[in-house]
Image 1 (cartoon, helix red, strand yellow):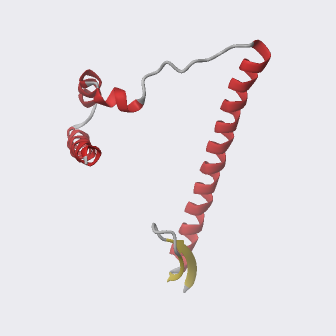
Image 2: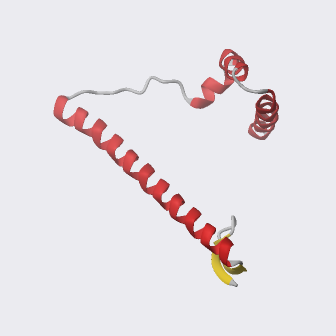
Image 3: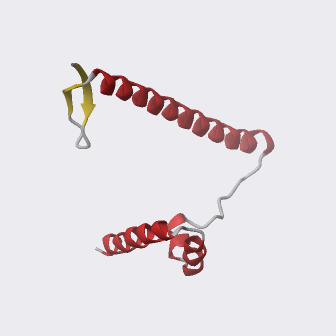
Length: 107
């Protein structure tokens, strides 16, 4: 048997005994997660650097006039268009998640 360090959702870490195959797959998943995190960090840094460069070198101000995501979701037309492209199972999941989200946000 092999052991892995598993981080639980509450933040604590425990060493858990698992099969060799599970440990191998877990290690691969962990590597992929770290690669994705590095890519995200790199893209974020480059995006910020590009906006900063435009502002400094060319004096361009890039206001963000896009509506906030929350405002878009509230927009009934947006929701109707969004639902129209979903499959039936996806529609059910969205409706459940949206309803729960609305109840959670209201409290």
